[in-house]
Length: 361
Image (cartoon, rainbow, N blue to C red; front, side):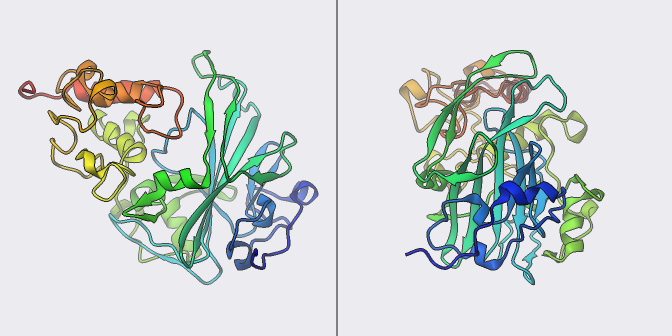
């Protein structure tokens, strides 16, 4: 039987008066986070709603962004975090932040019809919820109705088919995955337990355009009291933005992309730990990064190639082959991508092309 929840708020009418700082009538509470079974409607959480085509956070709900995010078929994303009043997270320089019980993350996904049109309206498809319960993290996906007034839980997941025009004028037709609750665990599981993925110090060390002005995210979190013990942003680690050459050279940006898109499985405790391929940003072993390392999976998944990364030869590198493929049994990551991320493949290929060393034997 579902535990007591905060009374459901109908966002359809109430959101009209809300601004980007979430000062409207939908107010989160610890009751909304304290879920047994997930509620049917996203509005029960009172975390986010949609106003005039924009995702709007509730009162006390903080939007945030990442330096290098996970790729999801070119989706536009809007992220928020909410901590129960009076709680905070302790800063960690190179480790995952440990959030208190009751924390709620949301991540909303949408697409404009044409990415070439500045300010084109976004159709929001889903909002994912990650809740820190007493027993650990729990996740669920909510799909928005066509009117963009309410999102309903979809525990079994779904594949959505639609088209959009990308920034290069190419019509794309993704098989967009709304993950099931069990599929949430495939990416978020680490050593058998669900974890949060994005909010590390090096990902949050960036400026964000808040409604009241632009500020570094780590600084804003500290100012609000939800982050304690953080140094000044210039003393904190910072992950390069993979698509911004001003933030780092090709190797560092390629490694940042692999960190964000691959390392949640490819680490010492992740689902792909038996592969021996470790794609963390701070990994220092060339062999662990795949250089002249034979793959665990052979055959079709390797396309007859013998090494994960071949210095100077992206066309012979299994890493690039699996990033390029959109075939479900070959593509990496295994979930959340049905299109090739062309710009990322190009960046990783540049990184491998510039590698020097003896040929793999």
